[in-house]
Amino acid sequence: MPKTSLTSSPSRRPVLRAAIVYALLFGAVGAYMPYVPIYLSSTGLDLGTVGALLALFAAVGLVAAPSWGALADGIGDVRGPVLAAALLSGGAIVLLGLATSPVALAVAMALLAAAFAGVIPMVDSQTVRLVGDRDRFGQARGPGSAAFVVMTFVSGAVIGLTGPRGMFLVFGPLVVLTGVAAWLLLRQPDPSAAERALRGRSGSAARALASLSPATIVRVLRAPRLSLFFVGSIVVWTAQATLLGFLSLRLLDIHADATTIAAAWSVGAVVEVPLMAAFPRLARRFGVERLIVAGALAFVFRAAVTALVAEPVLIVAASSFGGIGFAFFYVGTVIWVSGAVRPEAQATAQGIFTGTANNVGVIVGSIVGGAIGAALGLPALFGLAAAGYGVGAALVWLGIRRRRSPAARPDITSA
Image 1: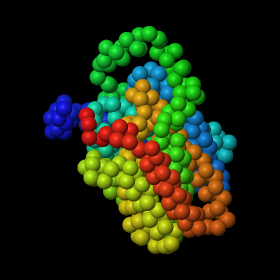
Image 2: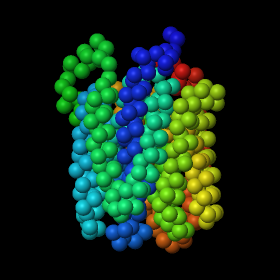
Image 3: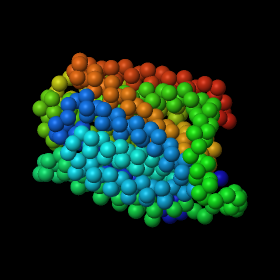
Image 4: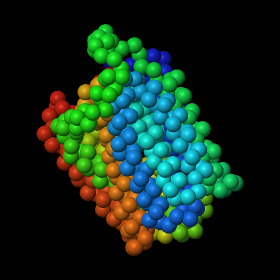
């Protein structure tokens, strides 16, 4: 069957609907991620404690992300879980913004992680289904990177006027709007007769509880080639957490201002937008597997430069390679996984690969990174991150290449 053009309304509308949700979602991430270490540090916490709180967030998300995904798979629709998660996140954000003691900060971070960790994987899985063609996933996701850039600068400007707590004035409303938009815009077309019959044999609650079983998650990882890919992803995301968790503090150490910090986080996102749109053409030419590994290697270059130089402008310039890395590694992972698991396990699988793997990485990267950064300095920490990216790239390549067959390879060109 020939592919429908994006210029025709039947295929364009789902992409635009998903793009709106991604713009709100990653606008929220852009308002929060660059500044949360600065906020935690402003409360009087030392580097090790900041790392521990970031690790706590990830530890809770480690369980929460695949659980939300499994719940959504059991219900058969992510919209309700995304809306619930966004509203719960809004409450946790209020608590985090009001917290003053280390214990209160820890509780608020844990509650936010429990609510928010599954939102991105659930939206990813629904978008792949909604657009009907994995070629268009990057086109739907690209506006999220553009919004990340805008809201990073907006949040930075608000922080300049109000102090670090000001980021919650931007982050909180955007998270809640993400849930509302997902509910309104990510409705899946009517299920097929076979799907309706399958759902009719058991209630939504029973199916949701069954999907939360650890056996469901284990079955996903037992799929051919996914286990080593999963380990490699953890190593890559560990290196990523090591770099991103302390990047803003590194820039403060070398006397960068708020605009420079925002630029260091935004340049990569600017690069992501065209690369995500072009991902289908690049994948047809080079293969999804090669692009995933190329993304990890681009991360290596960025970390190495960040470790070796002390000029803010060079660190900002190197951030462009972070955009290459994220566009190729993240989009490639979503596409690869969507073609490697059964349709009824999509949200669970995306929760494992873009939620669990990421959160394991943040736990290790934040705790170990905080200790190494305090002992050896942040440049040494970023040098180790560069090595970690390289090891992760090798593991991912071995996992993707094992037992390959034409039938097993995800087809990114078919509708």
